[in-house]
Length: 236
Image (tube, rainbow, N blue to C red; front, side):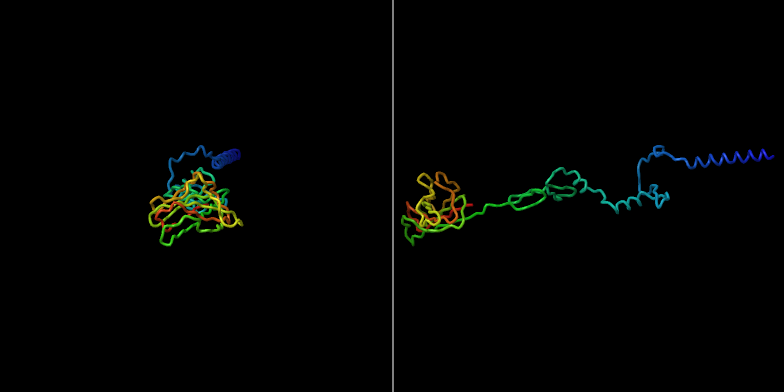
């Protein structure tokens, strides 16, 4: 009897050991069946304070989205951008476009700044014949405060008539101007039975550069009918 009792206890102990080993055995993830899709009610295991628990997919999604920016069309569009040293703006839904850096601006090394721009200046010469045709001669002396390069001229007269205007110069401290900057081969500003003419061409001119504090004046010739005129020089 004692031998049978001992055998029964030994068999029971072996069965307990086998059962314990089976319940504690690890199952490889690769051995689990694959889910074909996920929905919000699906349960996903988590470990919380050292204890394995379950949580729905929706619950976990809400938690992770509270920590990170959810993926959306704008983020996808930004992630696809490949340009460097660009500024982008949202030009449409889920669309980001590079900003065009216009004239007068520079974007270098992450710094947007204004670039140096040539300053535009004008100098005007008015000649008044006091109601009669202007007499040939030199008129309208002026000292200019800025230098630059000539870019154009406009000549206006009244009434309709003809007149030719030359521009003469003397450098600073040299008194009244005497030397033509147009020169003998240059095309002088002129009206020919007209009230207005303009040009951006300086073909044949002796000089198209003005210096700060130059003394300038105009000489007129070939006048017919014009009793008043204004010549404007543009330069930068």
